[in-house]
Image 1 (cartoon, rainbow, N blue to C red):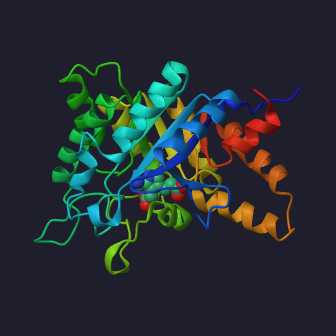
Image 2: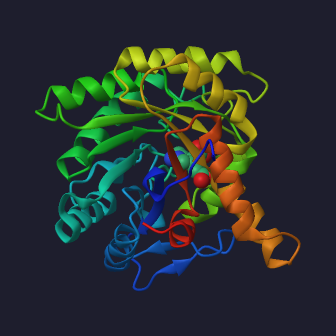
Length: 310
Ligand code: PBG
């Protein structure tokens, strides 16, 4: 009689792969999550695939010395994200959907999601969108099935769609981070990704204000009109109202990202014996699905898949 059933098939696992590592490196604020080498990423991808997980989202991390003001390393055909995509594809064929996070914050030395306009000191929306279009193409050429633009620049979905279509990548889909809030819940991700925003800055200039609910529908409608195949709400647990609104408003699949801070809170409290971690993980992810998400990105993917069975 259950009205909502969480299944392994709903889950996407976020994975980090770092350049220049000899061994996988644990992320202290995300217990159980590591920065992978390309080899360990392939091993983990096989494990997750065998558990029945249908997709991965990959975050490539450059060596600190490869960061610069425009994130130019991100575009290298032999860059870490590109090499990781090729390696996982070679090892697993088409059995896993490979999603590439399309953003520059991992690659810029100032930690913003785009390039900075020297005159205003603000992120230059249009110059950034041009770079996202090139990055998306490079990721698609390396084998990404889905490009996930996550920088919340205006016009990013249209630019990525047109770059892909203009280069024979019509089959590559777009998962738009459509309603992405400027959230304090991304802290552990920034540890995992080695990102710190210069001068104590934040992303409030391009990500959404958490006081705004209806604005999410405006952002989502724009992304769908620009060609998004799927739209995402992020974070998840504090935004169930937004997930429900978006589900009611669009016909495309809705994804929700149960983000690093949401995972870390459960892990930290469970480590202290204060809560039942696995129980809460299952309850939270089921709530995200109940609110209307078709796809859930979560660091719990592997653990929950083990419990649910493939
Ligand atoms: C941007 C990006 C971020 C996350 C996913 N893509 C960080 C940010 O916007 O600051 C956060 C994911 C998480 O917290 O788990 N590349």
